[in-house]
Image (cartoon, rainbow, N blue to C red; front, side):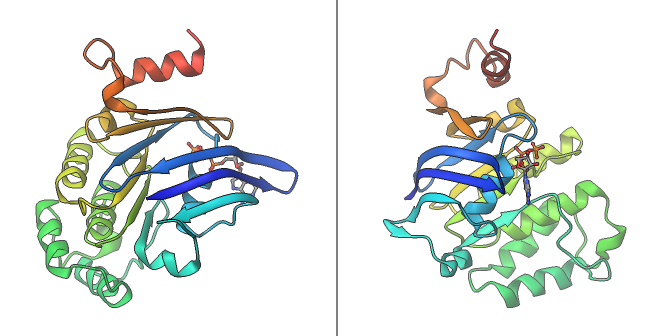
Length: 229
Ligand SMILES: Nc1ncnc2c1ncn2[C@@H]1O[C@H](COP(=O)(O)OP(=O)(O)OP(=O)(O)O)[C@@H](O)[C@H]1O
């Protein structure tokens, strides 16, 4: 279990996160939603160990987060993570050398499922193909915590579906996954739990099953929450 207690983050005088209190359970997929600039990436970076919290507690299985925990956390964002000269198969090898929890065979299977060619060079891949590769690499790790920051940004509906279906069926079922996206309805299908964040504070923290998604879409809840309509 992962616990965040009263997390605050400031950049200089600017307070970007405050009163963040979360309990994240193993085997669950969390959707973290909110408008631009409300602190989603900052929160994920703190959880990944890339950013330091200003105050508050961050615990994994009851123990304070240490940098050793980073080895069990996978974080992907829209930033480039590969060298263009690498082939897909080189990126897979690179991950294998770097992460002891990486399942190379699974990754090569995923590469095929994602309709990618292992011999293709990374700098010839389209944006959508690169996004698929990142997800394939990330979920081929047997990590405890998966942090996927906007994995669907700028992708067509078919690429989005391939990525979401793959995440749903092939991630480590005991891991905890947090996904951020502005495509609220697309992501709704694969999540168990909904988190809305506004101006650095969690304003909704609920199981998806508690929402009436038969009559409303998740985006209806989102619009209602953020537009106050
Ligand atoms: N290194 C930094 N130094 C100063 N301010 C920062 C830094 N990183 C983020 N911020 C600020 O923190 C706030 C939250 O940014 P963050 O990237 O976490 O938002 P977000 O919710 O992920 O936005 P988006 O949906 O646009 O990706 C923004 O006002 C941003 O300018």
